Length: 393
Ligand SMILES: [Ca+2]
Image 1: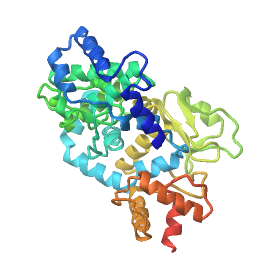
Image 2: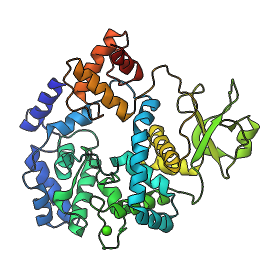
Image 3: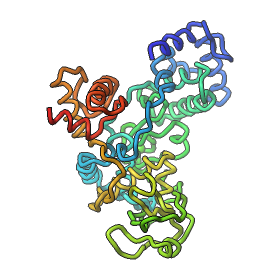
Image 4: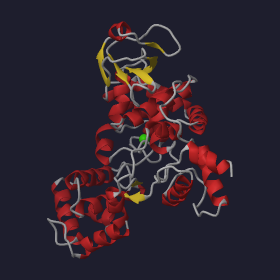
């Protein structure tokens, strides 16, 4: 990792320059010319870019590939845990009027809106660590992957400022440019953000009603069917060898004819085409999914994400979560369990920082030690076996 960082800094110092530009300043000058050609005033651009230097940490994050693919049960354990449900219900009470008006305006289920908010930003509590003009210009000017995409996002960022929706100082978000309560990319913001509190501005950073209405608009535009369910858990016959897949392709009668039943028994319900989602293969939980699952999938194209939204919306409504067993003897941890894990590691002399439930590099390194001690591959995965081992010592 250190080597990577040194090489990336060297790239900015001119040792291995990005293809199109001699250095960061000339890259920014080219971006300024492009912005003004798109109708953005020079003073808006200059003010937003004041003092901006390339940030090697952003490139490190872009280059950082996870050492192993996070299993879907780990995602769900962390994203749809008891704390998230309790918080979500409190937020739904606090912003009951905004949830009601967003649901009414766009025909999108308020529990789904709340689930997106909870997963995207932990109901606005996730830290916004990166100044967007800095992160985006770094990504563009490094000459790295998807530079032209990030250049477009930087242009959109400038347009948001120029319109007066937000000031430059408010534009902090993820290293890749997603920001606000619902973590919209700037181009998504321009096309889909709406005013929810009636002040004439679209402010997804400070206004919860704006964020809730904008999420509802996003799901609506992704094909949300009012009043319909995303789907539900099913049982497939032992030795099932029929088709599967997220895409809603066949009517419920087709799936019923292949022996599927609701989890715990009962005939299939629902109208319109449905797909059979097997997120962990044929030996794990199975779900019959309809077009509203697809709408959640459109928000962020991954089944781990769409299923987290769907399951969390059910839990907020008071329905059970996933009932079938995941095909693992080492389940994932909730955030409360992760904090316990961090406290136990601290008690054993590891420096893992604040026990905040977020598994960063220090916690991962400590987990790798424990994994090695109990005969697991050293992956730095916060799982139940590691937690149990620490509890029993
Ligand atoms: Ca507003």
